[in-house]
Length: 348
Ligand code: NAP
Ligand code: ZN
Image 1: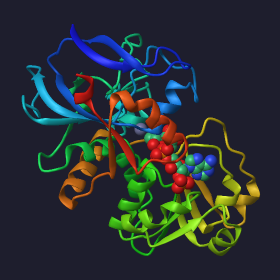
Image 2 (image 1 turned 90 degrees about the horizontal axis):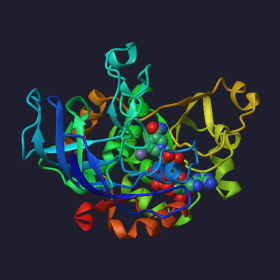
Image 3 (image 1 turned 180 degrees about the vertical axis):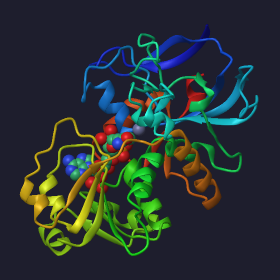
Image 4 (image 1 turned 135 degrees about the horizontal axis):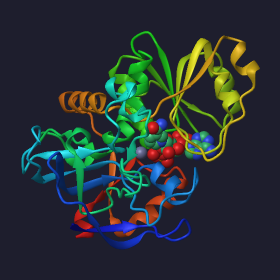
């Protein structure tokens, strides 16, 4: 077994603290990489706090992982020692169901293995995430990272990037569309960058008036403060798509009123509690509410290659692992500009 240093929550009521554990030896199809940076996703906070469902503890969060390969198995073909590598929210899936065959491993019908707070495909070995010094992952679930990119700022693409890329691609959002990005946080700021890159007219819907200048710098064309009734009224019936990245309870019916006829609300944010949606909010204008979860491995690689080519990265604030609790507190207040990334050197 391979000894690893990590940061873990021992229970939903304790702060993260140092915790040493072991990873499996590198198998014939595995890649081991030394972790250099790991992004901090709001999902990390939801899961250590049991917001969605009872978690598996100790929990080592982190699913925006980048680093350098230190060992590869005999059958590995896409990586060699010294290469850069990344892993997102998935470390395994059945790889033979209909969805896996369609490169939709995130929707594996047997059940995928999440990078942490999950189990390997054996159904009993817990997975541990990227707030740690090293990881061993099946090659299929390891992404190639260009050596020309800003590595720390690329880490968030592994979750925030692909989670916003995938629905925009699936619904063909681009030129001629009015896209609203709801919530300007980690996912939201990537949604703005991709929406702009795809040619859409992008509006940020935000509860934070102070973020207007940033939104414009990110490329957004318009900014609506959703706590201002006059601004909300003026935006009614105007958007083809809303990309909803909000992490907390919010009024779906109000936001649905901002869609045009046939508009689609693409939900990627996951508040703790279910939302109440009145059928009237949908039928007056044939509107749809849809959801999207991360992305498959092929699509994630396409997104990373596109970002490397077009120089798209996340706007980040680097932190040491010892500052994680403060980072979570700021995240809860919407005070993230726009992704915390942990420098894993601080853990070594
Ligand atoms: P984040 O950085 O904390 O951003 C969330 C943003 O939502 C905040 O910055 C804030 O933006 C807005 N917000 C917060 N509370 C709000 C409220 N009560 N009403 C309206 N807006 C509010 O979080 P994130 O990392 O981007 O993640 C966002 C959500 O997506 C989380 O629930 C996360 O678990 C989920 N997620 C889903 C997937 C997936 O596969 N679907 C993948 C990753 C994450 P403003 O200040 O602009 O209002
Ligand atoms: Zn995430």
